[in-house]
Image (cartoon, rainbow, N blue to C red; front, top):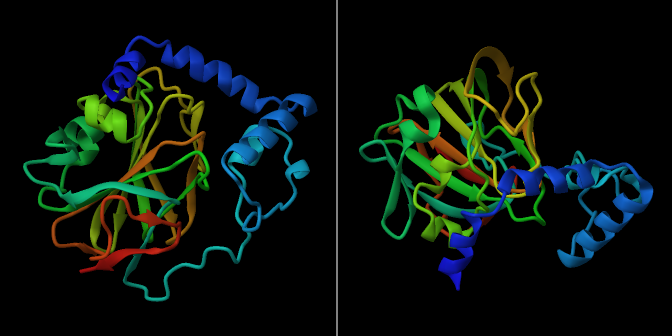
Length: 274
């Protein structure tokens, strides 16, 4: 059954489905937005306790609701300046060492960092990575794990397979095949990658700086010089997907209690510098 589910996605009109649902999600028609928001909140048991706006009627569209901001006191950053913060709410799907420029996907499957990130993937051999999957019920804004300067972004077009345990197991090179936005930062410990991976029904990946918005049509590489503090918002998913963080060799130590399947919340300690 799982393999059939993965195979079915290879023949689905992924971009057409995502665009169609994206248009409905962006609609500010009160009837459409009310139905979408209420049904989604009921299906995923979503509470607005931590949200900045705490009433479902305060949101003008499903997208407005889905990318809702948190209350300013909801997620304090780690107290120590040498600690990494989780960039998102989600579940750790993989983590480990980058060996021979390869990252682990699932059950013996590995994929190339160069294939994932292009030229921005240089300088991470022997370093560490952490892949975090965002479920539909999660908070969907992405924040910076550590203070740094954005130096490069690369928008890479691709497919829109759903991202979950089933597709990670059965679709080889899943993250190389899906569209993604690679963000490279310079930090006090060296380069850092924060990679936003699109998925089925992800109508858009947006950033806080001007640039291409998904779905990406061609490969676009841009240079930047934008400084961000730890915890600063850098983007958001319009419907959920995955964030992959990469760190250089001997630069960070991921928390020893972090494991595949661990739930993390944005702002929670992910590891330490050095």
